[in-house]
Image (cartoon, rainbow, N blue to C red):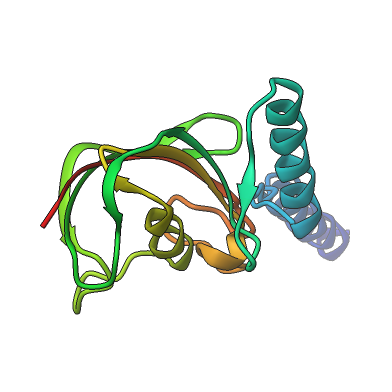
Length: 164
């Protein structure tokens, strides 16, 4: 009888342990986008801006932009020293980065920007500004980066303050 009681106690402890471990298992929740979510977000943004009579332009590689203000002088070119004001947002409008004044050499060494930024800023001149929608393939792709989830199309408002 003592062996049977010990057996039941051991079974009870094992059962309790299993319920505790498996019952308390955390469910991993991700906030990652999928390519389908990205495509839907991009379509919604494009539709909303077309419905608001915005003039949406696109590059041959799939970058979308709306020029808010046409600048003066030549367009941004490789090697130009730029000072820009920008705000980076997710498609829902949540800001993930902003700078009232940011200086860099366009396509310079050591200061590489995402492909979509480098392509998009070349539609602007000094004093010009635009909203640029960058598909994830021209941003951080299916890997994401830091707080940017995979398959995140990004919006940037960019104003070129100075070109040297």
